[in-house]
Image (cartoon, rainbow, N blue to C red):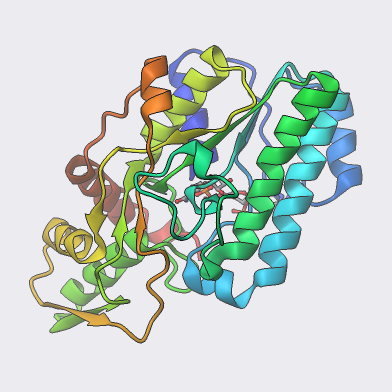
Length: 299
Ligand SMILES: NC(=O)c1ccc[n+]([C@@H]2O[C@H](COP(=O)([O-])OP(=O)(O)OC[C@H]3O[C@@H](n4cnc5c(N)ncnc54)[C@H](OP(=O)(O)O)[C@@H]3O)[C@@H](O)[C@H]2O)c1
């Protein structure tokens, strides 16, 4: 989702020499393959958007893969980029690197100040190692590696599979299927009370390019919308967008995750960047995308 959005944004801005590889062409977990690719291609700027990504259930059931794949991907790419003369690298972390009970909104200074949310700690530990690796390579080798910590993202290219997806695409799919099947109710995981922030992936892509152009510092930067809402409010917005008029049935036996997760984005906004796609508009366009890509959705 993020990689494709960055590519769309770069192409729209006139970029002409993009070096792109699918996972089938280049498995970033393989140090030898990554090393060979960097030696041959020598990219000047690297956006590291590849990662093993998923929602609560995927994190719960595959802790080893979340930790191993992400550590391997980021270690291979950051190290090879540095050693083959890349001018600048942007590493994408995630807001789940912050402690479960971090004061809200969460500033970048909350990093490593408390215990992590257990439902995604494997992924979070890998992401923390990635941003620390960027800082260490900057300090020891002078490599211009920067890190951005996005909030929850959504948009075209998202993963709508019910086992792997995050809450927003899962709700779109459940409400869509319930409307078609004329079901009376849709089940929503958890109590509905946790609060979350959502950023459209095209806004994130714009922020990534802004940072690649204008930011060179060790400190990671939060990227978010600036406001949150409860999962119950989100579910109602999704249902309205999709046209599902039945009941939203919350299942408190399923995990809630962190009670609240809103990023403080004042450092980024002070640099001069702001998001522009409202949740209402973003949900509508994402639902259009979902409907027109039924045959090619990721599973
Ligand atoms: N989605 C969010 O809400 C969110 C929020 C905060 C931060 N982020 C961060 O943003 C970045 C991108 O996330 P996303 O939402 O765009 O996830 P995504 O849609 O799942 O994209 C990840 C990409 O990485 C590729 N990949 C995974 N393992 C690979 C490997 N071993 N070799 C080569 N490619 C591999 C995947 O390929 P396949 O399709 O073949 O698996 C996929 O194309 C990640 O660093 C993530 O942590 C995402």
